[in-house]
Amino acid sequence: MLDFSEPITRIAVGRRSCLALGESGSLYVMDVDFTGSSLLRLTSPDVVPDLPTKEHSVLHMAGGWVFSAAVIKGIGIMVWKSDVTPEERNKFVERQTTQPHMRERNARLVSRPEETQLDSVVVHDPSVLDIIGLMVGDGYLIYLTERGTVHRANFDDSMFEPEAPGPTSFLFKKFVATPKLSYLSGSFLHFGLFNTAGDVFIGNATTQEDTDPYIYEGLQHRGVIAIACGDWHALALCEDGSILSWGKELQGNGCLGMGYKFDADATEMGLIVAGPYISCPEPRKVPGFGGQEDKFAFCVAAAGWHSAALVADFKV
Image (cartoon, rainbow, N blue to C red; front, side, top):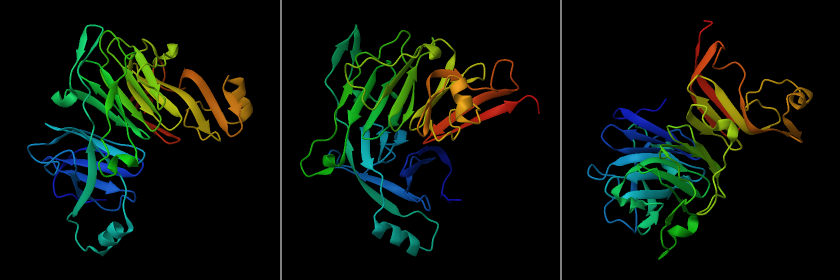
């Protein structure tokens, strides 16, 4: 259990880091081993002041595979590498206090694209900070604006080289819906978006400016209220408490939630068995949740090869 000097209002978890936002606006980081928290200060060749500050507070944050990101008021999106050097780890071990020390990270500002026109919707400079959703994948991030526009930026270690430009975001021209997209979630290689009408768009690490979104018919207009993405599978939570899952799981570890016991059972159910993987190409209802079932799911989570749900068990 970690001790913080103030109440924590939000957390975000990636493969190499866990971020925590304090009530005062301070940003804490637990890198790699998660054994201790440190106050995070972002230094950047793009921005003069150290961040975050009371004036430039954190609005959104996300942890990714190797990198993390935060939307900072009045500044924009900052990206940094989530890692711990042996020297930093040794300093933490040597400390005999629960008060977090300062951990400094070199960060880069995501460059702002010029204003463009898209189907009569003016896409403005994101420095206005109308960002309502942020996810960080493997070498890229996705953000969603209040106008329903979806943007991507790519990055790697080269952005920290002297005189190197920071990452630049660009617009997904085909990710357009009416009513506007209003929810974004994802991790590693996959992400999902949807709107209040039940339109669901899926993208992945290969999605580019002119790429069409994946449209799974089994997700459309099913009352999807949340999406959670693991490494190779995903879950969708529906308003009736049911869960839909699709993708693949490793060695039948159960992250798809289909409930088979043997490969032969999976094949009989119409799942695809290929070597160590069992795949569900199209979204399928997870047995036991929603509708007339005893269990009503109201929250889902997925990461790696794992899935989880918070449920109300009406049988109990």
